[in-house]
Image 1: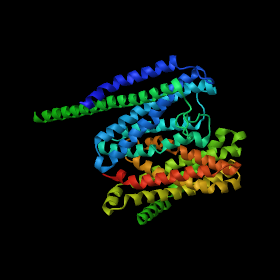
Image 2: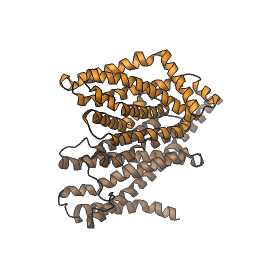
Image 3: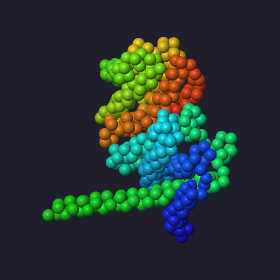
Image 4: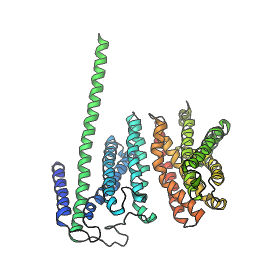
Length: 240
Length: 219
């Protein structure tokens, strides 16, 4: 009952939170003292990056690890990892696009050889590589095993991206909320907008993941039905 | 595990010594690639020592791809997998052995390419010698990662094209840290930060390989 209710509410709650984020971000919050109206892009960009790097990649990695662990090995985990990685690709692309739109007026270029930008792009290529690896193997068990190992290997890049701003001291700004001194550098309506944005985009990820998961099951059922049909047709040919 | 590792490494190196693929195919490819990189930069920039570390690692990366392919090709000959399964070899040992053999091959090729960079790209000899330990660690990390990625793509559709797609992005942090440490050795600067990244990467790839190589070899 509770599960059904939460599943039904996931979509509407996500839409309300994202609507609230856009309303607060575009109309209620004031322009920034330094960045002016450009700051409004920063209500969505960090939240999208959070989902791309940590939530979706994290979900894919945990599901992959659970698949590899014999006690929890099931195709459910493999499907979750696969679907998370697909959604992750969408969010990584969105992270790069929103970052680029912000970077053009701020840094003067669409793309800078910044450590975080480059490492995020590399993570995007790794996520695409994961999907390519899945397509290269037909055997479901082999495909699941190999992609699970690859997802775990790719996750090694996530801490590198996270700490790249500190290690390389390049253009990308440092943390505003989760600072090393534990001081939050954003306040008032700006802080609330950022909070709604983070929660909204996180829920959007789970909404998309659920939709993609259901689609994947339907696809598997359809291919299985097609195979049964082909086998039945072959058998009937043999009967004549 | 270590005994198996030594046996597998000795087997791979012996095959390499007998076939001489490394000597007659991979090393010449690396040298040609190094020369072409210099030509692409043009005479004004090719002799600039600041380009040396980046070009050295870029060429080493491409050479490493050939070697990973070769290392996996040895395992995919008919009957090899069945023999390993029948012998009951420890997969962690097999992984360490293949990584060790690949590492030795990469070190050997790396030395030739480094000599090429000193000659052709005018990289300072003293700086190159200072950078030698960090180059060694970078290539060891590449070998460990390469063995894993090679096993991931082995036997799949389009394995030869899939390997670079998966491996090159994963090698990027190693390329950055290796190049920066080499540049720091040449022009001065903090080396220890890059050493930390390279060592952590090496340990991480070895740990993942020891833990998960068996999963990849499961049938």
